[in-house]
Length: 354
Image (cartoon, rainbow, N blue to C red):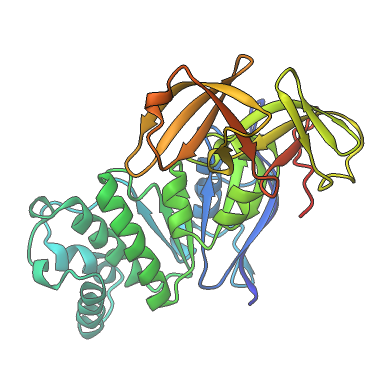
């Protein structure tokens, strides 16, 4: 499948701040790609560039084979959907969806046909003649999406579109957006700070930090094999656990804690590193040589996060059993060696190859 949207060597600077640093990535036709990152990572700048509200200092943005530099925002054929819906309160659902087509003076027959089509696939047929104030948050968001899809845009640009919805409705709407994108064969760039939302909705993620791309991949690829320590800390409900280690031959020494023996990292030279492991990849086993003290346990609905103290380091361990009765007790810890990551202390790069 060919690249449909291409960002090529894009840079943008505001005074002394580098908002975007030579970023490049592509979106294939029919994909949903999410841009995810903390505040100040460059997400908003990327939106402004593709919409045409700002110009890049260098680089190109290509949509369907055409460089869009110099094109006015209205001529870029991009449908923008934002968190505030931007619906007209005095118009009903039908009128809101069809408003843009009327402004563009499309034929009445086409307007009606497209509006009813959008209402059908967005399940808005029963509320077509209601005003926005009579709708739920989810329905209002679907109206905003409907107004966008009747344009048949080359790209859907969604900026935090679900942030005003409660958790349950956000998850439901995520599924609706995925199904809709598949049905209309759309191409979507989805911008959010919510990683769970991004992972659920996207074919691939682009992780940004301080204007630079940290990693591009599927949610599973990024979660299982983060490219660097920033991504490892940023992705996941529970932060990855980190321990200082020293490698000698096929042994990793955890200072005053214990030893891990494995030949999986024979390609890494001896020295000091950082071991990273997810909370679900640690098992509590009394026969392990690595011991720690249980200092806390939190129930998260179906699972527990148990806190284990190892020489002033706190490890978070995900279990499906209540271990609160062992508070203050000693427990053994075993790491899943297929899941550990080794990070360079200086560059923070993940050295794991597989």
